[in-house]
Structure formats: C-alpha cells, structure tokens
Image 1 (cartoon, one colour):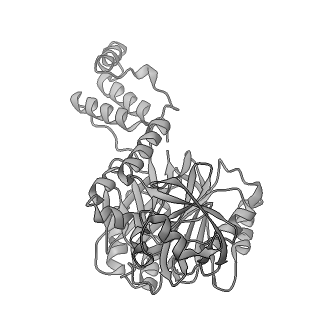
Image 2 (cartoon, one colour; image 1 turned 90 degrees about the vertical axis):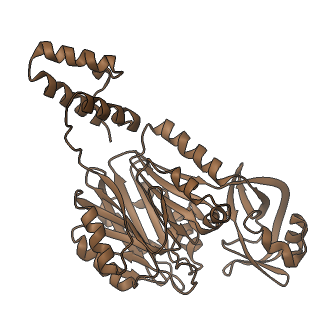
Length: 438
C-alpha cells in the first residue's frame, strides 16, 4: 500500500489549521521542526512503518486524533477448545476487515470436517483455504493447539481462485485445477504475468506427492507457487487441507492470487555446502529411498562423510543434510532414516543427481539478516505468510531460541505454520519459504 503517510499528515494540518492559511503554514513548520516535512510525501509514497509511527506520535503531541485506517491484511489467532469456538473468535477479531480471502492454519487436534465447516460458516462471503499443522505461527508467537488466520480484503487482493487437487496417490489433477484457473482469468497459465500473479500450495504432508504436484505446476506455468506440507502434530496418521468449508486428505489445495500490492517470494535455509559431493546411483524415487551413492551403500557413504558409525549417523541428519546445489543455493534434502544400506529422505532424490553434504549455520542470524534486508529493500512489509519447516522448529526448541526466532517477525503482520516440508519451485525440507506483501 502507499499514500497513508500523506493522508495522516493532511489530517493533522487540516485539523490544526481549520482552513486558515496562516495556521496551515505554522502547522507545516511545526511538523518540519519535529522531523517530518509534509511536502516530501505524496499519494505514491511508501507506507514506511517507522515514519507512520513517528507521524502518529506527532499527532498525539499536537492533540490530533487520527482516523483509524481501514485494515487490509490482518493476522489473528484463537486458543479456544472447539472448532466452532475457534472460528467464532477468529471472526470476531476480524470483524473490522471486509475479508474476501481467509487463509488459516490449525492444529490437527480439532476435528477437520467440523473446523472446515465452521470457518466457512463464520466467513460466508470469503474464499477459505487452509491446512492442519505441526505448530502455528501468528506475528511473534509460536503456538500449539491453536488456529491462526490471515484475512485479506479487496484493497490487497484484486482476485483469488482456489482449487482442490484430489486423489494424490493415484492421479495428478493439477491440469484440471489449472483449467479452472484459466477459465477464471481468461488467460493460459503459461501466459500469466509473473509480476501480477502468485500461487499458494498446501499439500497433504504424508502423501509423498509434493514433487508430483510441484513438478506439474512448474511444467504448466512460470507463476511462482509457494507453500507448505500439512502436518498432524507429529502423530503421522493423517493431514488435512481445507477449501471453502470442506476438509480433504490425500489432496492439495492451490490458490492463484492477483495482489493489488507488490509481493515477493523468498526462501531461506541455514546451511552451507561442504566439498563432499555424492552421486545417487540407485534410488527408489517414489518412496524417497536412496540405496547407493557412488555405487556404494548409501548409509555407509553418509556415515563416513559425517565421521560416525552407521548406527550413530542419524544424529547428524538435522545438522548435516544433503543439498541439491543451484549455484551457491542449496535445495535441502533431509535424511529421515537409515534401514540397512539404504537411506530414507523427506524429499525425492533422482538417480544420477549430485548432492553436496551441508553444514548447519545459525538459523536466528540467517533469518534475521534476510528479514532486515527485505525491510530495507521493500520499505515496508504489510503481510507475511510463513511456511516454516518442523525440523527448524525442533532445532530452535533444542537451543531454547523459539522466542528469539519469533521476535524477528514481531513488527510484521505474520501468519504461518510448522510444516512437514516446503514448496518453492519444487519440494524442499529444513527450509522456510515466505510470501511477502508490501
């Protein structure tokens, strides 16, 4: 958004001057002396949070009560004990926004069908999308057993379309969903302006189908789809995605957004590549199993690389996963287990793929640096959707850094969840992917 600072300054000047030209000049001079020159702000000036805070403070000093700006993006959360109570509390907290799209993430401890229906009932005119989690995020809070939501109004989103990809284990219905999107927009998905559109992808986190979905998306469009794999609070039984009042398993929900504001998709992972490179020479791609690296038993090769016996190598999985390198950027493939000679991974590894052994860096420092850089580049972040790998959460919990990590987002309207994997071009792990709105 833009132009809010000018509106605030105009209100201060109009209130204090009461139409008197001499008082208007005096008020402008007072503002300049206080550090804000109203002539430097116009309808397209960015709504820099620090400047807006300063203007509000000056207004208070001058005895001017500023009109409350309408909210366009708003995150909220509920810690109630039932789907109906959660949905009702979220709706009450979002009563000041005319929501056209509501994105929500919920603990799997709430009955999915009841929650999906309750959310739609309390937001009857909005398009609804969400999934179950392994932990929820709202602003500076890392939560459990909650429902978090972010509402968008028509001032932020010009258009949104949502579709459900069902029967993931046996079919790939992405083309059918995209055909619906094409009818909705009147354009081919491959022809959409990637600076005007962005996508969200929430996928059943136990389906082993994220690659299938993301690969087909990449085949059919250049629009970036970002998202996460639904969780079930580590029960490993069933995860759910939601669309317009219904709960689905063995499914994915895709959204095509056309924001009115600028946006950016970012990815961060806290690893650097070492000089050890492995080539996958025998794999079961569908089951995400690697039997051999460089013609040798995969578990033996990995254990030797991390300097531990095979039976202890699992202790290095979070700190030293493997990475598919694109230049200097790792797309993380985290190991999930060892069975005899084979290794199981949380992402597919194709036969012939070369992967680097990674070494962990500092999650707090890396994430803070990225967010501070984006704040400086974008001037403001009016909303952030955060897809945060469960493995990162585990590391932060072990190091007692959960509050410090959450604090990085304290002044940014944020909603998100702890995922069973992340989507960014393809499927990755031990990563945070984010969608930022300015």
